[in-house]
Length: 284
Image 1: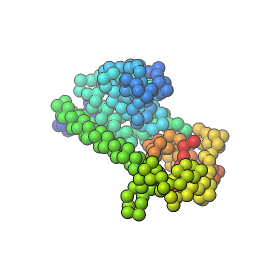
Image 2 (image 1 turned 60 degrees about the horizontal axis):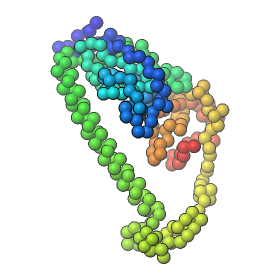
Image 3 (image 1 turned 90 degrees about the vertical axis):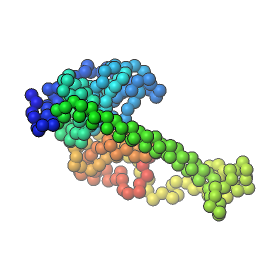
Image 4 (image 1 turned 45 degrees about the vertical axis):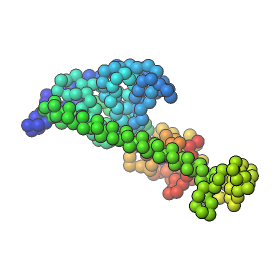
């Protein structure tokens, strides 16, 4: 039953207005690099696969780790560790439902995920959530249109960031293989000015540079804890001591979305593996 909040919005319970889609049989490992169809897994990152499951819009939520939500449209697939739903009500557009869940994602992550290790989504808690929707469907359409424009702007910005990251990678390669002359300009490459380079155990490097071993300049060096020292049962819900895991370390950056915690007591046991400011983390 709808609750009238004011003359412009109705308050509805999500579970009264949705239908659940069949559970997928695709494991997350079904993702392929050059897949034809969007593949939604229990992650904020969209993947791709070679087969599709649906061609009608749906809201797809991850069921493990941290709260995530995607809007499936066109031909798409979703993995077995997700929950797919769509609106069955003329009053609630499926895309508008996606936007409302997107808005409530921090609350869902806090209230509707449980577990001492890998947390799992409590679907009934999501179904019990009450959301506000415009009484006039035309208002909902206008809101969605504005949000799509915002998404497009974000996509263009991310494309620009990627472009500059590639430019930065090229500059780093030049800086770290050729160096800078006294006039502030890049040295000519070795092919054009071999007299500006000398050969070392790691290859040709600029005159005036030397090669050293990591062991000779490190302050400390430690592996992460063995698997037997950090198991599923050692993880606790927030609050606790943050544990940096493999999925947090990217090829050229750090992903802070997938958070995990261990108890103060176990953190003291793993004091040798403590991470401090300015540490360099390398995925094993």
